[in-house]
Every structure is written in C-alpha cells, then in structure tokens.
Image (tube, rainbow, N blue to C red):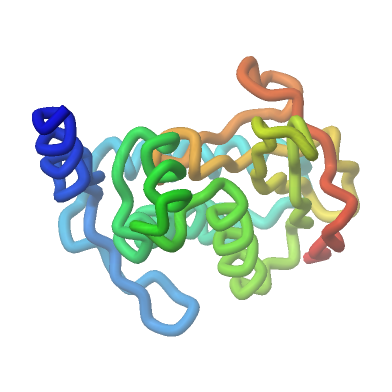
Length: 189
C-alpha cells in the first residue's frame, strides 16, 4: 500500500504534467509564441481552412485570428490550470481538491469567453454538450459561420487532448454526438 502512495505522490508532482509551447497574452490578444512549433502552425492553418469552408462570407483575416486564438489559448489555459494528463486524471485531482480547474466545462467556458472577446463578425459561437445530466457529461464549443445553424458547425474541444485543441465538423466527430446546450445563449458575431 505504501508503494501505491509513493507512486501516486510522484505522479501528482509532475510525472504527468503537460508540456506545451509557451504562449503569452496581453489583454485579449495573443502576443507571441516563445518557440515556433510546426505542429501548432499546421493546426492553425488547418483550422483556418476549415473555418473558411463554412461559408464564402467568412472573412479570411478573421478566420486566421480565430484559428490562432482557438489553437493557442488552450495552451495558455494548460499553464493556468497546472494541467496534468490524461484529462481524466486532471478530473480526479479536481475531485480530490488538489487542482481547481480543468474540467471540460471549464475549458469550454474559458475558451468561449476568450473567443467572444475577439469580436469577430464572421462567426457565431454555441455551447455544445453530450450525455447531459450523466456522469459522462462533456462540454465543448461549436463555431459556425454567422447566422448558420449549430448542425453546420465545427466542434472545438480543448479537454479531449489535454489542451491540444480537437476540431472537426460536428457530424464527423466519431467520439461524441454533440447537441446544442440550450442553457447558454448563442454568441452572435
């Protein structure tokens, strides 16, 4: 039993901490990456393309700003949450009172608030949920082109991969069957 406690102690103190590209912010804007990471850069490019595909009315510059924010802000949050991986272990530590934030709804709330602050006019933001009311409840953010329905959106899930944002068309998500969380107001661009 003593060995289990020692192992748990070692894991909690850093064995599973999440190492991410450092990101700094000033007010609501991303300032810079301390170290350029090609994987992160490619993710921003991919999300920009996906956002542009939502509608011909999507502004190209706004799509890029949105993509940078959606990819980089969760990395900043990982530092703020003192994130460990996998996500279920972070949840366990929160349940024990060792950590304060990092549940899926924290990620969704913080990400949607940050994206809202960008004041981008090309997009609407929705809260998404699966398994509402159950122990397996999970939250995310859905982005659509302005004035388009939830069902046409792209899911943004920062919790799933411990701050490495997952994104994809709602209908193509093989892990979750998302529905609009009507408890929250849609944020119109």
